Amino acid sequence: MKKLSFLFTALSIMLISNLQAANVQLTVKLKNGDVVTGKTTLPKISVVTAYGTLTIPIEKVSNLRLGIVSDHTKDGAVLPDLSKLQTLTNEAEAKVVYERLLAYGSPILSTVLTYTQNPFYKISDRDNYTIEQLTDELYNKADLASGQTVNDAVTFDGSNYIEGSVAFGDITIQAEYGNLTFKRDKIESLDISAIEENVLSADGNYKLKASYHISGNDNKGWLNTGVKVKSGDKFAITATGKVVLKSLSGGTYGPDGYVSGTKDGAYTDDMSTKYGAVVYKIGEYGEMMQAGSKFEGTANEEGVIYVSIYETVYDKTNTGSYSVKVVKK
Image 1 (cartoon, helix red, strand yellow):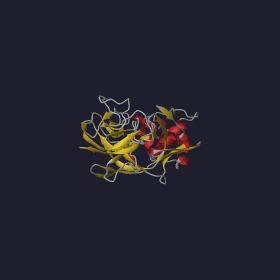
Image 2 (cartoon, helix red, strand yellow):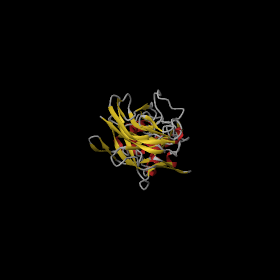
Image 3 (tube, one colour):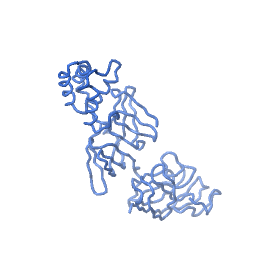
Image 4 (cartoon, helix red, strand yellow):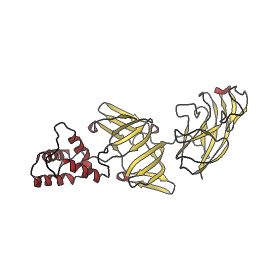
């Protein structure tokens, strides 16, 4: 995994409220081990660095891991106390400084860690009330394992992540049994899966466009339904409609494959997955399977259901669409 790492003081990742929000499927992992899935809206994520601003489309983001909320407004008091704690030889005096720093809580952990990384820092000769002990206690207050990064981290484009600070508060999701609100300090991480806009028909079905939703289209050719299943869940897919695939000699196809017109030489009736058919996969990197006009099955893994039109060659001049319904039973 590629890692783009910046100094904490030079980087902040902010959810910009004035950018257009996108509908997303969220899997919220809480620090107590609970996992909840639901839908909400999130805007794009902008990464502000000393070198400029990088805006990441929300559909490119797959995971957001939350660290702690840092407070650098107290650095003016914290840094001199850290210097004292490093050099004091009197244990009673060190205890007073130690307890004063500990009272600030986990928001100063980032400042403490940065201080220990400076070349002038050295481990104290005292046995008690040391900066190392302070660091361990602050980690405990933050419910983080000692040595774990305190920064938030965003994973995007599958293999890249950046660390920093996310301007992120409480979040409300529409879950299976109603709306649920989670406080930031209770959240460990969020798995994010964007749900495409303008793909729902008036009847609530998904609209698979032949000019766009082709399995061979590397630019989001798979439609994210937002329907998440776990291993063992039963689900159903139904589809209607016709499309004309210019990439297959302009023949007409339906959810189960070839219908009429010129039959392309690459098409055979004994194909296990037929060109032009409705296909699905579970998870972005799941195995592609044919759904056709009517399919019922059981999930063998956990993930969001994606649907597309099977064709290895993408041609934007394709016409028509399928109306697809995906239901978790």
